[in-house]
Length: 355
Image (cartoon, rainbow, N blue to C red; front, side):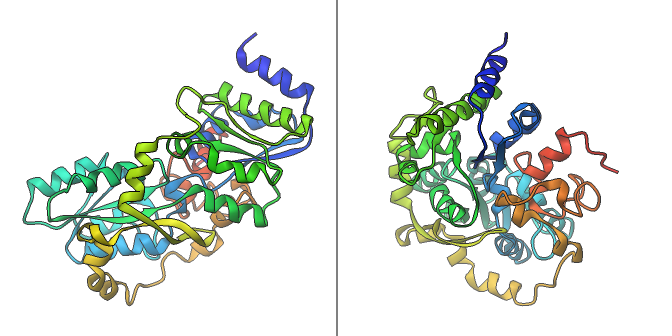
């Protein structure tokens, strides 16, 4: 009997009605790829929260990046970000109009472009949760070239969870393994104190099943704590040096999340002492000038259910655009763009006809 089969048998033995939310795009990919929702007992509902960094990047931040590109700045970012729709198109479409938009695999690639082309202004459109923020902080501390800066769209996990429990019926959380490698498990204790079992999980199918089993055991015993089911990568205290670099370079600010709205202290901005690398300040006038008259984009976007999907309120196949007007080749909503998006994974792994 496989490890997965043994875990499923144990889960079935103590199964009870429970709504478990994960907040990690990689977790969603594993759950969808292996059809885990189909093999778990019906009373166990696994919800997908706002754990895809591409998916939660709001339209106005895409618009700002496009505005910079249209003003003559070189915009660099990850491949998925090129296709995320803003109010009127994507960075990929801006590139098709002649803007200098380049895909990179890391911030170091972007810095290399700035070093090789010192006559150009190069901006790295930086997205992601606590997982990627330390890398960008470290790059700033290395003092990159004068023609390089960052346009930040970092989001923080804990403030988002605080908002979610106010409006979503959820009983427990699978904590995101990647984020926990940085911040550890202690920040999640506040949710356990409110009666939410929390288990930090890895990304293999057996690791996620183990996390679900541990949540059920907590409920059975009536003891709600934070447990670390990913000890090979996650230390309870997290990565202290990474936390220090984030604190040194960034400060928290209120931040907009696509489909969710503004969440207090859920984003990061570059501290004043490093403002020479803050593209939002350096190019503030150019951004404002270009964004004054942004036309409304695709009318079909008003039918997109990404907002409810990101909050675990809706499933992709209940969206009227899913697998019809919206598909990976032509995404209307952000959840269909990235390999970590719920719509993308449902489309890919549930045998959906993409006609």
